[in-house]
Image 1 (cartoon, rainbow, N blue to C red):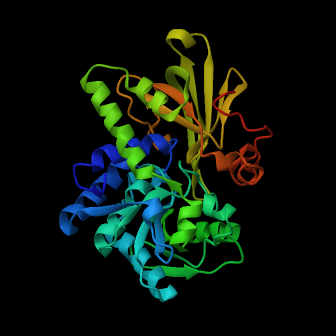
Image 2 (cartoon, rainbow, N blue to C red):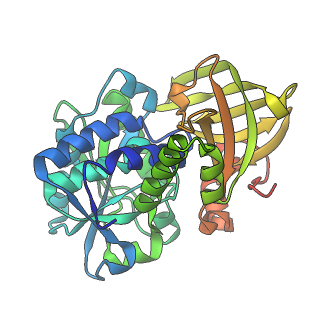
Image 3 (spheres, helix red, strand yellow):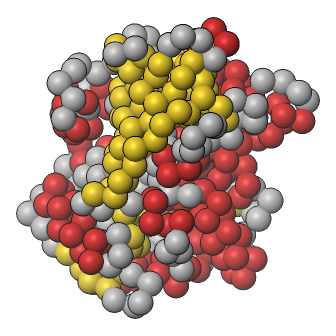
Length: 356
């Protein structure tokens, strides 16, 4: 895939929702925004990460906030361009490439909007290989790349630029501003050179999203098991199949926090799985025993269709299959685990990967 057309967006959105581990925002909204941008401005060139020049100016663009808010407070395409233009103006540099901060839901498609609006190519990569809830939780942080200066913009036209002492302070101050902006805002940060991007980003993310989406679509058309196709492609494993019997969800400090309880079906009859999330799924516990945790991916998929179910979309009575898949190996280094492992989120456990 060397360019993104409107025909690619459905597959990308479907695959991004899977990699988003329940978070990253509603992929349907992201697809509509991207579809409008591509129809208005034309297709978006997609550049493989190894082909990004050393002296490129790469700018990630994303939505920050609680995904539950988007159910009633839709982002606008104008916000996306405003965030990117604001940071570019502050930096005084001519942008050459747009990038994804994370692979997940709306945040795999917001950069498509920015690239189309600005007439720039999009890098086939992202900063996580999945979605995480806090903005310092990207691999560029492990390489010493600063989150700031970063821009933030809301749907009213308010905008600002933050310059902080470190990436965690960027998260803290930007989160406060996001709450005042209605718990969702557009941001642009982690401006980097092409050489920094090649070193720190996860390659091939958007192509993987499109591939996963196509796998689910084709499996359903041929009456195969779409979940099996996804598990095989990601090198993961099934954790649990069951019915959602309870969801406790609340928006706190700019995040959608909570837990979902599943009652087992088929081979899991008689067992219970608890999913604990903060925008994204963090821990999966089967009958009180942790089966998987961050930094690896925990994804909820509809049992029949293979479509991803976001944390804000979980509802009583849904029948889902929970799978786990390995994260980029750099997340399993001591530095990666300190940045986004279970203990960072308050769970006193060592990471439980897909191999158990």
